[in-house]
Image (tube, rainbow, N blue to C red; front, side, top):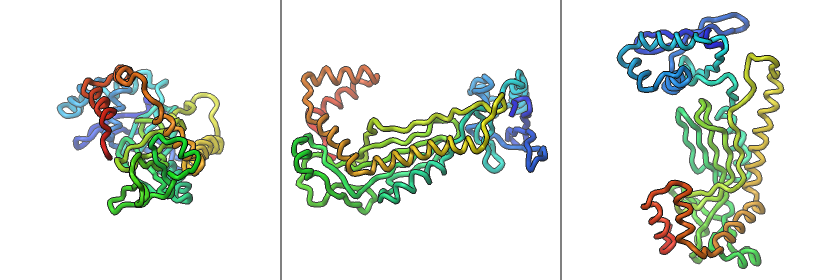
Length: 312
């Protein structure tokens, strides 16, 4: 909708937005309370400094309404926005080109395939800003210990893991020790309100310490689509098919990650990397520290770990 068609108002300490939207073909007046994220996005879109916006909200809501209406309607014919709502709240104010890829779609498409293959949800978080889910395949794991030749020749380091009472996993109970057991994992994240892209990452997880490493295979889709209300508009069926392509790619990512042969290739690559000797380890660490802007304490911690690896 055009920003000029939105009007802000104040009631009982809340800031509302009011606009007309078609319901069963009939224009219907709608009032939504701005949620926390929508407040922040309103300030950013209208160029109002967040601290000043918050001060007006707390101390002078009438002034805030005046400011919001003034800048919403300024050039509002060209400014188009997408309002995401839940019940009577405006969750987010987004660009009209924002592509809707919802959390529940991501969950069901990824989880259905993962469950079918025997994977389990290891962690799941949901906040106002983001959805996060990590799935783990406990049926087969592998040891990262740098012994590439043994792994290639015998495959002795592949075996099922088991689930502890506290919900974490570890390697086979009769493991002789040495090295680190890892299992294939899928790491997903998404934001429905403009706080990040949709991502499905293929990973290996060091289950003893619940750390994971994302491999080179990652599906990453930003929420960018065609601008609505400008020129040619794709049909709902076309949009559904375009979205289905993304969900199909996500399902393929899950199948590939939890395939034993694909996992074996990933582990072989990690073992080859672990077997590679750093000729100048201090210099290598310095390059990493500079590249990522890490502190001297971080540098020393990395060197200490290389000299005397901690046991997880």
